[in-house]
Image (cartoon, rainbow, N blue to C red; front, side, top):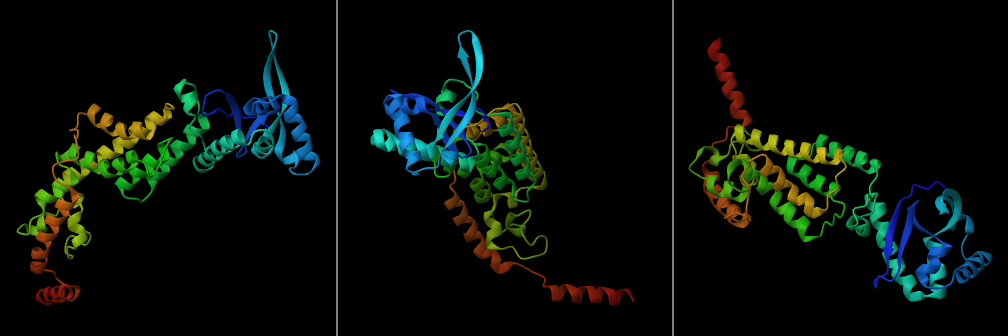
Length: 336
């Protein structure tokens, strides 16, 4: 088996045992020596149990044991030798025979680690991060850049792209965490405020007006001649002028470029760091920074806009397709 040297650190809850565990082929691997250290027994005990496990066909040695080349120091020399490693199935089978409590602890950690690896393609190794050691290889950053560029090329709305990138780039991403919820709730407001000095709810609340042409909207789904719908008046971007929309889209595009640049220089991000990156980017580019959540809540803004719309909607002057065709026909006859 080829070894990519993808080791992560395992530490028991009390910190008494710390081991380097090989993560490879969607399993975790340890040597006999490491298994003995993990369960606090002599290596000969581990050897005896492994022999029994394989002789009774409880597990297949071919699928649970592999020789992996390792570089070892022998005196002043570095020597490359093939050492037998055992995968998670073998480790747990031995563990339940010698120390079920420690085996259970390791199994819980291993299951969580493998789940993260299978879902994300890598594992956040807290111990190595604390020590400043490099965890991610060049493949990780290259693939992450490809995913970010794929998101940018998609037809998803620009704020959906921002949240997609947050999910892809956060090495500790958890959709249920408070950081994630706050980021999703506030990122749109941060960019709106940077351009207009108002959050999305403040834009809606201050601009929605039944007495204005098109209720203050600059654009809507059926613009320019179609009916304005209730859903249109609840979108802050619809109230922005063309220049503001251009500035907003250009700013978010620049933020994407900023993130790509950081990835190219092999920076990693936790959720907290990625959330903070928006303010860092805006501050560096001398945009206004939103402090807090704004003066108007989404509930207040939507309530006011809907009240205005209920009056405005009764007065909408919509020319039907039939009326448009009649108008064209009359103009055509006048030209004859």
